[in-house]
Length: 307
Image (cartoon, rainbow, N blue to C red):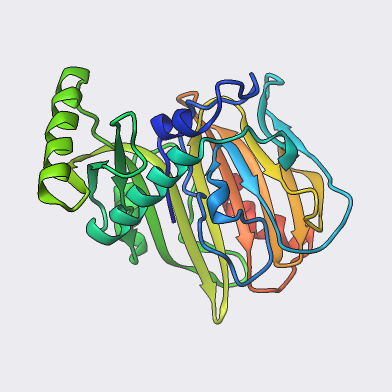
């Protein structure tokens, strides 16, 4: 799955992006590019991006009235909203193709838990570089718990109804070079890409301890639910294709507002929470095993995460 960073979003979103969109916000992991076998809120790959500040969701069939919901924090500030796909900003195809290419290179060439700066000659008239990284994968809850110690997020080793932790992918922000160093790196990589005949070059960089997002899977036999947690800045916006058949309802549990969404491929529960340090995190619980949990069952599953 592709992950586009802040700079990439600015490259592919037009300058006329809606004022309420935070195109500099942190990017969440939910940048799905491949077609899914189950019909749910996933975008077509070439459309481009799923981000915390600009999330595009599409489906291939089904017609229903679209229910747009939103969430606010305790101060009444908008933290999450859903809008029709027609309002999604237009994109620059050349930049999207370049990002597609560097994403593919990152998937092929990087090891888990590593990052690199990529330069490609194709679809790159402005001669820019792209940062690519792969998440750190955890299959042991104690290892993940130790790594997340001190982080202001709520995650559990087990969810109700016997759902036990199975695995998690964690993305950390890559270390970015200083501006003067970045210019030298770009020039060096451009020459390497051209002279090697490969059309690309890369330079590895380290990862910071700055957590971008976590996606954890919990299993109960053949059934699975996932929990995605992403640090956000500004208002997170989800764009939904008007043809998507779904219903969405706002709920409240323990003082927390949640959005329960039911669609043909499963259910989801979305909410935002403010950490003690003032940072805002978006949580999403997804059930894709075709069990179609009721809203009460979804809230019960989420209870350990709401505390």
